[in-house]
Length: 260
Image 1 (cartoon, helix red, strand yellow):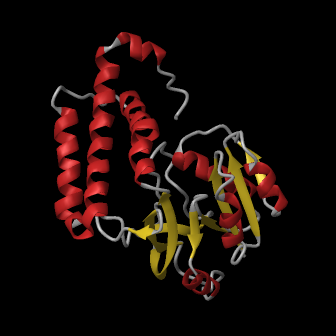
Image 2 (cartoon, rainbow, N blue to C red):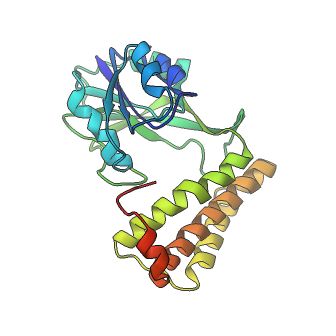
């Protein structure tokens, strides 16, 4: 028996398909909602999911909240914009979770922009541990880029689908609006500091890594766009960190208790 756990914030566009995807392999679904202003909660409850309200604590910490409410030992964690492929459903259903030696299982993740599957820039195969035994492991309690740290995981020959961005506009908008600001605040709290060259050097490094070393050049326009987006996100992250260091008015207005 498996419990599906999803964290949400204003995911009315995604939550129905996500829950219906999980219900193919899960006996219960738990939604940990960060006080959504839309009808995410109602949609989830209508589909039989149990909803837990929890102000956002950060990526890994938030994903672990649902474990205390799960009646099963095995947890399948998806984001609201992720879906199981038919192959993933069949593979998970074939697992003998009662007798396995593994504490977790990883699936490949297909990341999409619109309906375009991005296979370069490190976006595929992008193995992620999503099925795990809560008594043996869980997500690292960090505020960003959290992953399950398992001792004996196994990689499954199956994919999940991640509708990362609706279009290129969203790809560029999210780094400025969310990711870079969150990362800058977290770095500042950890005592990390930037210098005047940091935004440029980190931005350039991100582009070179994505476009050349992770073969973004093979992806045509989309590969170039992803590499540029990564560079801009990295540039903004360190530029905002530098701003926190040297502008007292910005620092004073920054709410470090609010992750987003």
